[in-house]
Length: 190
Image (cartoon, rainbow, N blue to C red; front, side, top):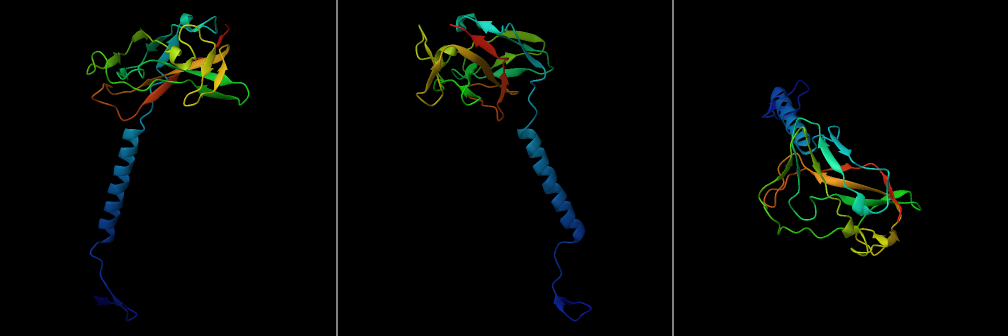
């Protein structure tokens, strides 16, 4: 306790201004580093699709290849079906992309602890699991919207997206940040 120049009793702070400033700067640095660690930029500028046409008769013809032109590996999920590309269909009425129905993730897969790695400077064919987004696997007539029973005509404008991570992704190890890479749009006519 002390008395200031106006005669008012004051309590001295156990923290000096310099100490308080140092604590604030340390807290700010910790928050900044945590933010950068969780939201690192995706490597989409170095990932490219090839072997994608603008028009297909059916989905069996869709056989995209992912090219990793970057300097770091990317990893696909070992959990079924998340290591595959998922369909989206353009809804002409709403003017929005609708994601197709998708299976429930399953950890019972071959080599569950070995990550699916796409190394820098390599390319890999990616399977588009279109059957999960259709009303019938053998003779599809409709696209089924995810988490609904809504069906859209088979014919239409589509794209797909692939989930990937910068860290190994296995059944036992799940990376914190999951990124997606979208394909160019294409039409399916029959």
